[in-house]
Length: 214
Image (cartoon, rainbow, N blue to C red):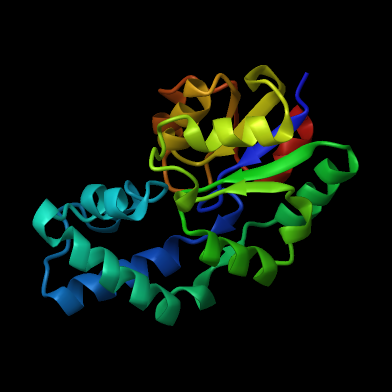
């Protein structure tokens, strides 16, 4: 029986892709670096990972430039991204429904706690989440299970009592590694085909469809 629902943030609760991609483009321009082969489709493949890994995977940056790229990205993100980040349709109503049903709700994200808290408040959904893990919570990031395992401990539930909802294979792999049930969402950064390859328990095409499986 599911008692706890753990959400990814980027591409799951909120449409952050435009803000992230605009910031990455600006970072590459400032550092005089080329766009990755594959363009924005490739850049999206890094979203959902911790920032250093995200820039390495999505922007194809070599190890030697990553420290400077991370620092530049973080500075530019605050200047560029926030105005482009919005919740997906039906997010707040669905969270209210799940909250009223008595589910414990948490977030496991690869972004910083500072920007997570700011964006949750901006979208007026912070009140639904009891516990959150972020990039600062553990040195072992997605697809490692640690972000989810910390939440299971805080909520005092087993993996079999938790459903992880995310838009990337990294979310689904984290959930499986933690022994949780899995739900992929197709409206984020990875395709239905990518998600299906991980054999999730559920796949939904809109946020309100979570009401049908919980």
